[in-house]
Image 1 (cartoon, rainbow, N blue to C red):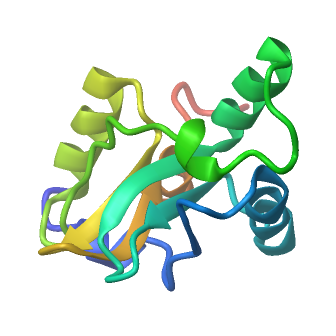
Image 2: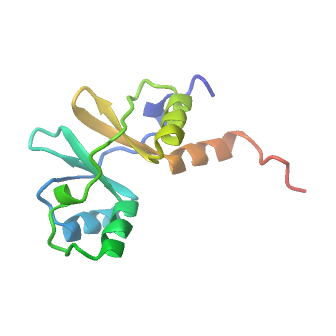
Length: 135
């Protein structure tokens, strides 16, 4: 597993929105592409934040925002990233340590993909039998 790199498991192309996109628009991207997060980028395509399904739950639970609220006001700014050349074990450790389960994959300032806990679980389920083995 040490020789498996983030770039081989990440989802690409990246689904992104600008910070001025509304929650309704971002929600539509999530639903249309059946994804759990959308990266927020500036005009140059540089990462500015991430909006996850968990962020949506928080917004609804707080009840202070509307569908026309700009994504930039509710997105997560403390984005943990990785690169395509990192081993997946490093990405998994980052997820556990940070509590973030969607990591944008960057190449310099550009976002080239996203790797999620679900991507890692799907990979592991194909290479290792359940433990203990099912009878």
